[in-house]
Length: 307
Image (cartoon, rainbow, N blue to C red; front, side):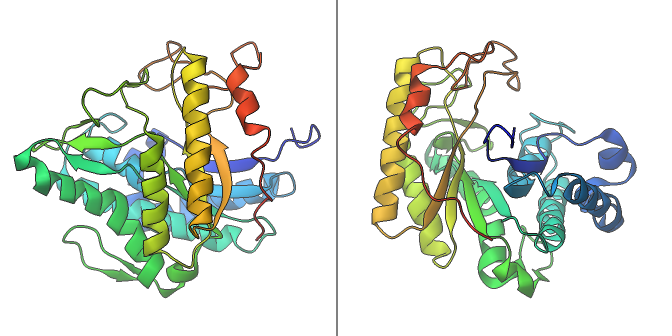
C-alpha cells in the first residue's frame, strides 16, 4: 500500500479482543495484562510496521468499546454491568496511554480516537441517563487529556500528569446524534429522521457541533475527523452527506478549530457489525469499483499532520 502511494494509519485494537486476553488475563482492566501483554503487542507492532506507516491509533474508541461491551451489550462480552463498565472504561483509557508512551518515541504521529455523538434525552425522564452516558463518552477522556486526571463514575481519581500532553491528534468518530432513554437505550435523533442501514440518522450539522465542543474543551489540541461514514445503497445521499460533512469541518476550521485531517469510514464495502454484507458503507464497492461519492474527497486534501 505504501509503495502505491497510500498513507497508512495503523490501529492496534478495534472492536473485540481475543478471549485469552479479555477473559483469562482480565483484559485492559487488569494492570498486569495492560502493562505486560498489551505493551508487548504494541511494541511488536511498532517494530514490524514502524517503517511502513504514517500514523498510529492505539485503540479505536476505547470508551465506546467499553460501553458497547458492558452497557449496551452489543459487543463482547455482551453484559450490562455498571461496575464492570467503569472498570473497563478506566482500563481502556489507561491502556491507550500505555500505548502512546511506547509509540511516542517513534517518528509518526499518534492519534487517540473517541466516539463523540451529540446526545439528547428521549423523554423528560431520560436526562439522568443521558448525562451518565455523556460522562462516559465525553467527560472521562476529555478530563484526562485536559487536566491529567482520570475520573470514571465513582471510582477513585487517577492522576496521570503526562496525559495532558499525550497524543499528537485528538480524533472524533461521528456517525450521528443519539437519543438516550430513561433505561439507557439509545436511538437515532430525531426519531423521524432518515436513517442509514445501521439505524443511525446522519446529521452533518451535529458533526460541526461536536468539533466545536471538543475544541472549546481542549483548545490547545489539534483535532481530526477520525471516522465518519454512511451505510446506504443510495450513493447520491452519501455524496450529499459527505459534502455537508466536509462543509461543516471547513466551517469549524474557519471558526478556529485546528482540524488537521478527515478520514471517511470506510474505504471499501466490507463486513459490517450486525449488518454483515447487507451494509454498503464504502467509497468503493467490494469489486473495488469507485463510487461517484468518492470523488467528493478529491479536492478536500489537507497537509498531513506532523509528530
